[in-house]
Image (cartoon, rainbow, N blue to C red):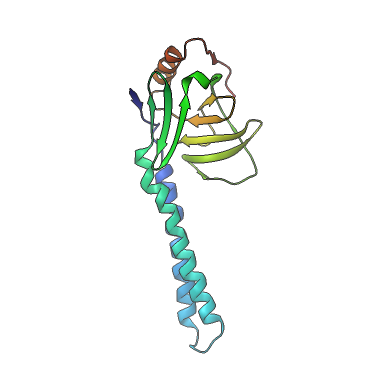
Length: 178
């Protein structure tokens, strides 16, 4: 089995920065509640809003912790994309096309920050892509099957593509980018 790691990215630090900013907002709301008189009706509302905001920001630190585990495993029968507990297993026999391309944003939100895309992400002109990558838009290796599309960003892209093509046999890479 060959293991490929993703391209380096600052995505992990974007997650940490956004999480820290949301924690700061929550603490600021709690502070605003403390500044009010104890009998002020807005005080419990600010406490609740502040604590729930700070607590919800912890959800951003979950993918932050998973980030270093991202990898792509390739054997003679499967390509597995992994990041924390998120795992996509693609049977090589099901692969219909492999391309390297830039993707366009869709207006729908998803787990996508600069330097990190994980899970089902909708893209304009392509549809939903199951992402496990250190980029959200540029230079994505797109692996297509009849049921789904998968996006990844191996650091050694050309080596990965040569290895994948050798294991695929008759499936050819689409050479057009963009």
